[in-house]
Image 1 (cartoon, rainbow, N blue to C red):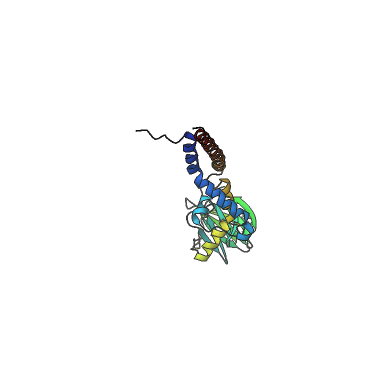
Image 2 (image 1 turned 120 degrees about the horizontal axis):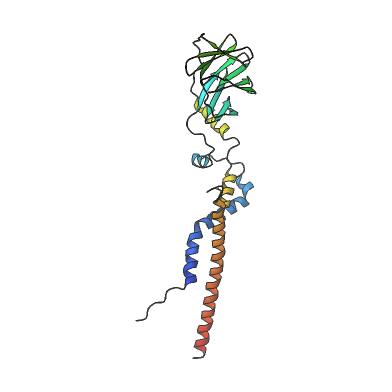
Length: 256
């Protein structure tokens, strides 16, 4: 009983390479076709709404926003981003602790700073408080800023909001956080994302491999391209080997 010969090595490697390259070859092919028709498909104008993809690109805010009202204005913070009436205002790592409006100036209290803006949302100055303890809350008294630190010590500013003095005076109207409506939260999400993430950007990143990782993702697609070249060469070798084998077989049959 004769043993069946195993397929030669090139055929086995050809099959393995083909299976390994299948997924990434499909990604390259599909994304390539889509990119050739960017304008027709309006990929550059379509925005990604998927939270998974936005989180993958790290441009979706985490947690819930913090909000304080100052007259007709609302000052919010989501992660490290401050917002004025739903528009991006300033980036700061310290927590938003309160807001007070004094005439046409809005004072925004952070842990060790007070950010001054006008009622149009233009930044005037970021002032360090220089207090021994972090700020706990903010209010106003006689057209001056009143701060309360974490030790419940009060500090009042001068008329120019540049110097702080200890005070025993207290007020009842300390700044209190207020909830945001669903439509305002949606506005903050859009402002946090800036111009947004286009479908075209995602397709480009998939095509180049950067979607998987900004640094080494391109090497995945490079490897896929190399596998495709090996697949072509091994396929050509298999075809040529079979052709030689058929010629040899016909020659043998002709002379026997």
